[in-house]
Image: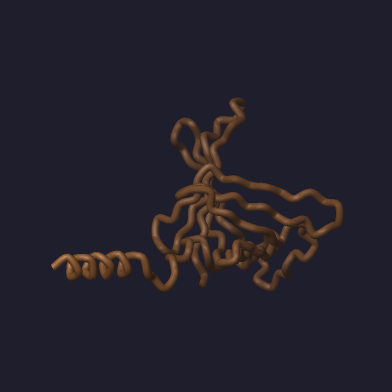
Length: 154
């Protein structure tokens, strides 16, 4: 009886601890901008929609902790060309906690410092939407916080 109980316990423990791979982080994938929103202390919002050209921007987050970006200028011309001279087109991402990420942009020029962004909150209301929120710290400004909403492309 004791052997049967130990065997059953071993099977349960083994079944719980063997998984093919952990769930991939929700940020992994290709994202495009949908809108930027400033939320004022009085509750009103100012929404900025991307131009036709800016809708071509992409943020690609890979499983290996790296990311790349594409940058198109603000324009309503659908034949726009990508901005190639941007200093920060790639970098590394790290998940700090459930709603916190650190983005470290690599500068494309020698002797140029990395740019580090740590949004106040990154959430995924559904599998195809990401919201990146920054709280406003300037007491002179009437903005309480602002956020960017992105949509999964792949």
